[in-house]
Image 1 (cartoon, helix red, strand yellow):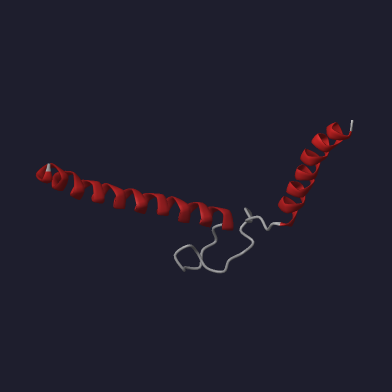
Image 2 (cartoon, rainbow, N blue to C red):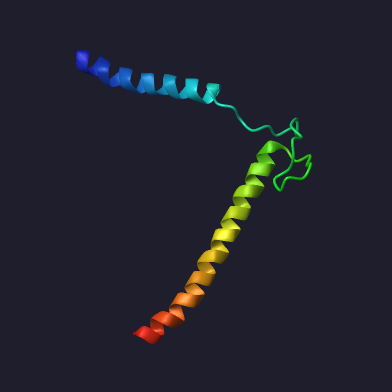
Length: 82
């Protein structure tokens, strides 16, 4: 019986700690309350959530171009070597 209580108590404690963490963390605003400067340093009225989404999207695009150009250069060099 004691082992069953231990098996049940562990997930309960995990859920309780997870809920406390989510409630304590600051979440991005979606209403445009903050107007401290945009993603690119301009005064933007975008909400904080959309600023972060735009920055992450631009990061994916930039990393995609970097990967494309690295592959574009390395494939012909690999064919010359082999």
